[in-house]
Amino acid sequence: MHTEFLNGMTSFLSIYNDIEDKLRKTSSQLIELQGKIQKLQQENEALKRQAAVMEKMRTEWPETEENINTQSYTNHTKDNDTIYKIKEEISEIVREIDNCIGILNAE
Image (cartoon, rainbow, N blue to C red; front, side, top):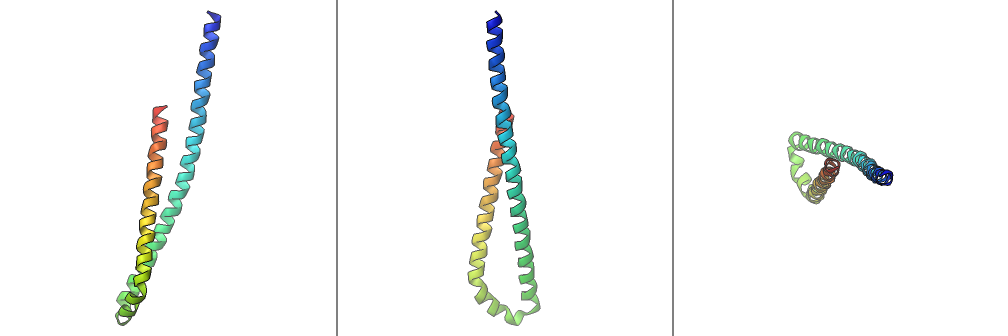
């Protein structure tokens, strides 16, 4: 009887330690992902400010709009790629956060 109790306690401690390790790893991942989200939000704000400046330039100096349009075609394509990549990174981070929450809820 005493041996069964010790085996059960050992098993419980093993499970407890495993859960504690997973929680520590998940918490670490969550902190890392929060940092990435903050960085992406800052990049997003910078892009919004840049777009606002470009819009202001377009409305204040319409005679240069044609020149800006020809120059910005390549920039616009790069901006679209950048925005797409940012959205993809945000989606990936959200999926990782969902996975972390799922792991936490499962335990």
